[in-house]
Length: 393
Image (cartoon, rainbow, N blue to C red; front, side):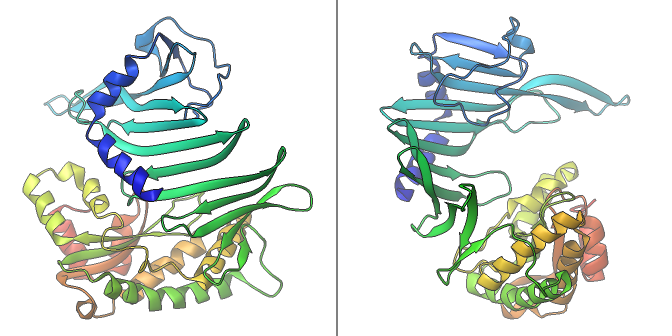
């Protein structure tokens, strides 16, 4: 199924205008609202009561297009954004922009949703392009969902695939399995003795590990952080070597979630020198943020990602759960910064072609901490070179 939905994604990604025209041709009625159905990102199979309709389409935040059978076939979501005009008098002009569009197709016991996003140009109110973010498919049987399939590419991330299979006994859901592109089971939801569904990760060993459980007796946060640190220091260089990167890279980035979120799993990204040079040639220093996300997860495949380790999986989840209970993610971030600092002491040229200012850095996904973390953990030459190029704030 992976090959089929991947092919479908590639076909749809270049056919926005055709998909929009064909789908909207089936709309017999539009409805407009201040808000959507609890901001549900996918139109639902059945018709669900929504907030009160409004009569002014130009003021709506959400619009639904229904076909002759009363099914949602189009959904539009709008954002209020701002255009910044750089003149002697700085101007900030607000306007409503189309943010997301969903086009929905139906067949017997089947639904497919195509999600397009519209990146904004903050210097002009004109739409730049329409990007296909996701293809989602749903199957039903006897009125129950039995499978969902998803292929998506969100900003800053690599392409991601998942398949969920739902197993029923009568009206009781007995098992939900989440599979990867190779058909391997990554996660399973299993009811406990009270009938509550509990999420387990299926480890490479074949064992199920219950996610979200408290620390076992005698295990401390400090012990788990030290264990994770040792594993990362060993696996990350090995992952770079296994990736067989052939072109120069100027940075390896760990991207962790910000305050209030789970720090683990961090993402990993290699930033290519060719992308830095292309960015510098554009001469647009205000968009420095884009440079660090251009290389999102590039250079790796699923066979050499540095975090794919059973011991690390268990340690990360136990840490996330305990640090959430303590309402303090600083120990996790500090450990990643320590790992980055230690990795910066290695000779990376033995594993990949690197630039003279190459470094390793850990930062939050919004890059708010990038500059300070570079200053604290990277070689001084790297920080100064990036500052001079304008690729950090």
